[in-house]
Length: 390
Image (tube, rainbow, N blue to C red; front, side, top):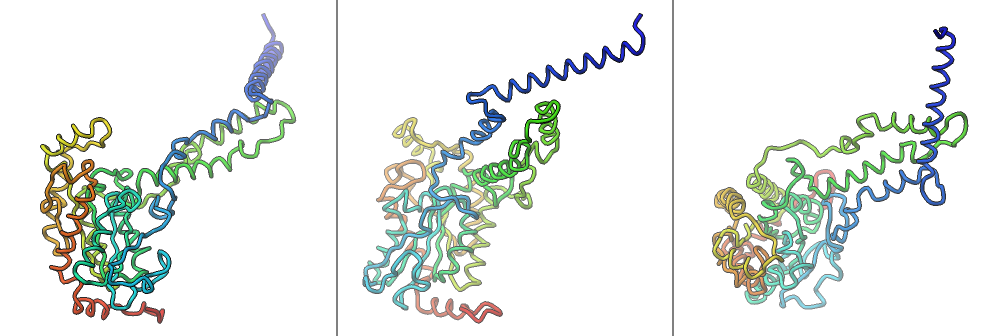
């Protein structure tokens, strides 16, 4: 029978042997890659942790909106504004040129975006101004994928400083189809992905992997692994996303979120001396027969929508639109025929031309271009309190 001393020595020997095997295994793992670079396996995996973010097609990362086009606006003019009076550069003119011209700024998603729709309705709107003998300076601020939430933010940041007379939003379907992150209206999945990527990178700069210890002293590799495990055992290091704040979670339905945003845009525009109008855009999903015909035409290349989901959103948003005097519901007042659409929501040039005519007629009915309306608008353009500036 072993004495207590022998048991202790045997246990110590066994522990030392196991620790040595752990050290040897750790050493073999850390040096298992070519060129025997310590910690290379960890850094290699970290470099490809978010490969999908590199494949995003948006040309510019926007700190507030998530993404944007390289130029925030594309400009058009009615023919009555001569070239010498036109702005030199996208944002060169703070006011329309000449002074009698009406500055119109349009917002929207890919159905407005000049990068995806060259013959877009905003360009056609400038042509309608020419036909009506109006001097119009029209700026297209549409951006693919934008929801009404992003339009609201863009209005505050990019549109208000340009002091437009009229702001027109064409939106709707992105609020139905583009998901928000977990009920947070001001965060898109893409923005969330960017933030997770950044939070993970910041976490990694604090980890033992970023500044690995010198492999010296007794059992250095085992000590390194224990330090690494202790670092990742904390909640904030194990899940960097927990450190991201997306604001207050809301309980908006998609239709009520849209209504909330357009009412906010109307209030902001009015406060800073512009008239705001919103157009609830047409969608073939509201006409299942035409949608099926278009589906047969597009085959597998089209982005399909659930007619039930589309109808549910438009029922709610349309009911709100009919209560807002500055809202034009083109989901009801537009021919939902596949001959005007190139897919289910993007229009052919003939569709853009018809849409521009209807929007222009609505603006005329609202007396948006009348000198009296412009004078009333200018009266509200007061200096910011305490700034002494217009």
